[in-house]
Image (cartoon, rainbow, N blue to C red; front, side, top):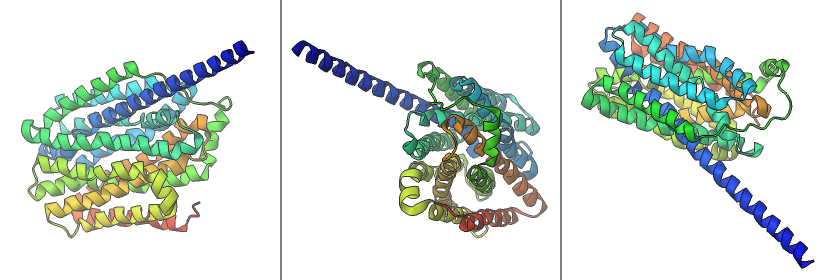
Length: 404
């Protein structure tokens, strides 16, 4: 009997040790994937603070600058859903994440060598291919969490995006100020290579599958009312972002006398608060404040910061406005994404997230084009006023919707 009890105790000990080892390995994989997320976003954002002004230096009109900026979203609009479907079918998520970093490398290299402002459209489009793999990063990261922790996991993954973007935009401004804008493209190439090397240590993510995937399951996503609604709300968010902080605010700052360092600082300010608001979107804002109230506050802030640009002519005040914009951005991106895929089947979440991001690519595409066209026809103040009004449409839609 003693021998039997000893065997059971030994077996339980081995099981505990194996569980601890698995948990340790799982934690290591999460950390590595989180770092890969940071590097991916760093590589395609390090040149963003000075990109619109770089285009302007090359002789581009506001309309052409808007086209360069919108190509990033246009590619995502077209490619995110097909990439998500292929990822769910093939289950080769690591491959797609590596391909994304390859496109980031190609984008940086393209910016480094092209001399025509028209060709910058193609270079920015390549970075859009990289960003099109973002849904796969998110779902791969959240796969190690329980169903109840999905909102929390997606919030953490989203914070990784902002953790990559903040130092990228800040250092991008510093690098451009010291060595010139072209040096930021070299840094983008190096960062993409580091990200690709990191994947030699990352295992293929394991996604729990409930049943075999069928074509009608993918088509059924279009009938998911929450997925469609929150995806459309994200369109308004991206129109606002790619008109303001990620669009033409750097040009306004340049006209006010800001140098490259200030441009980098401004873009960082528009992202820094998003690290915290995105990380807390599921655990605090959704659970404590409430999803509906949080969305209403954030959309109002986003619209108000755009309208405020019409009346502000001091650089330091614009930096303060960008902090508020960043707070709203992080909350909206994470919370809208979590609400959109919350009732999507686990084995379809890559596709669901890709659908969400493909749809909001419409906003990335339309925002810079609308703002650029209005600025050329009238002035930038008209652009900010009009887009601020468009953003308030989302506020009204959220106000009228029943949200649990």
